[in-house]
Amino acid sequence: MRTKESDSPAPNTGQGFLDLGSGVGLVVANMIGAGVFLSAGFMAQELSAGWILAAWIVGALLAMAGARTYAEAAVLIPRSGGEYRYLSELLHPAVGYVAGWASLLVGFSAPMAISAFGAAAFAFAVFGAGDTRLGAAALIAALTVFHAIGLRSSKWTQNGLVIVKGLLVLAFVALGLSLGDNQWPHWVPGREHESHALPFATSLFFVAYAFSGWNAAAYAAEEFRAPRRDVPRAMLIGCALVGIAYLFVNWILVANLTPERARIVFEYEEARVTLGHLVAQDFLGDAGSSAMSIGIAAIMVSSTSAMLLVGPRVYAEMARDGFLPSFLRGKPGAPPRAAVILQGGLAILLLYVHTIGELLTNVAGVLVLFSALVAVGLFRVKRHKPKLRAPRLQALAAAAIYASTSIWMLYSAFKNETGLIPWIAVAAVAALAGYSLTPKKNKRTKEQQN
Image (cartoon, rainbow, N blue to C red):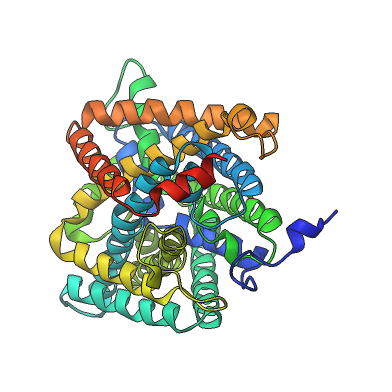
């Protein structure tokens, strides 16, 4: 049964322009990238086909636990901003402030740069050589224009790209199931281990990054016509659909490729060839490989567009709260144009000042850290946030699963990549210093704590 509250227009925007279908598309667009066509190649060096598929099932369940956690947060706090808004409300405005800056500098700008770079690289592999960074910058600039023009152009640009992405994934699955080998594979991993525990745990990092993006709808909650109703549904439905698609894709990959051939993923940065290319080439020859490159490029264009739609809503919220210049807020009924341009400009800058590998490493740690803090924050609601209703037990169970898994993943990441610790620490200290100097800090802190 609908409630008056859930059917009301999105607060502070005048009228929401997103519905459930657009929300699901936004989640799908953020989640599906090239990672699903690469991860099995790394995993096959140490795990059998059965263990690889089990890792994707576990990854899907963990992503659903995260989506259920955020779905509860979206009902309690139906506001745009994602981690910035949730952590400001559930923990402390300073924590939300740090998360907001992380979103601005790393959470969206860096993945945008990665996706745009990949789109340009795959497109040039088919249509001829070119300057990949320049091509990526041109793509970001073009999408920035589309998303800054107006809400309608932003919505239909994104919806169109999501439809193309969905059709491409469905075409790959249909091709694999109809022309591929659907017998259970019996190949042996490249390296044998006495125990599968460690390689299985390591493989979950690849899987977790491939599933990231299930929280996309939360960043633009106030752009929905019925945020309390549609934002949670969009995250859960979108995550479930992607989980099913990922299982089909990985079945096709492990059923049709051996670990020896799958080693091609180690040359991805130079050759721009995925496991999907190998499968498509086996079925359709060189035409299949070219079609796969075009498909991957289109998938990455959709991902870039989705991040450019949701990311600026975080900075608009920070501007509304007085933590960023007021011109980033935007006007009711229009996209936050200045924030969109800022997002696009930062992504282009990162293309030229960092390698893609450095961006990927830093992004993974930040995404896991702040989403885990949101899960922890749900446990503070009943005692410390009496104005919010207590989270439901199933949501707290999902939050416990997601938080504990994320903490374990962070521990493993910090242990193996010690460079992440000072990188995140310096970023956090700099953000907190900025928070302490923000004029609106004291006023906002009192509002959040009341």
